[in-house]
Image: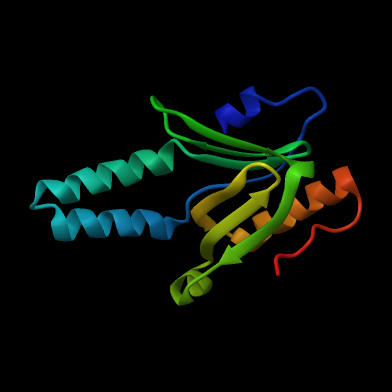
Amino acid sequence: MSYVKDHLGPNERIYAATHYHWAYVALAFFFLIFFGIFLIGIIIFVDMMFRRYFSEFAVTSERLIVKRGFVMRDVDEVSIDKIESVSVSQDILGRFLGYGLLTVRGVGIGEVKMPYIDRPFAFKRAIARAWSDKCGGTLPERK
């Protein structure tokens, strides 16, 4: 959580933070075990582990922060009041294990996608709570 904590504004507080689900790690090990004899399996495994370790997902009282990467850092920040909708997509295994794809749509930003996150509905509720506290009312649902 270092990036998020280091970049909080005055009076900004963290509502929720999440990370990649353990199934993402299991998938990385699958690639390592079944394709590890080839160089591609090792490359995919290392890439997935770096992606997991250096990614942060958080919603604060002011914004949604999605940080990926270490050397080549990619940070998406969306002001809470600019969020138009939040949707969760889960396949059967994701529903059973508790991971999913969270997609946030906002004014002027298009979409921010967070795949394989742990407890996506709890994170969606935290975004809705932050939106409600900042804007009043309820976050509109995607149609």
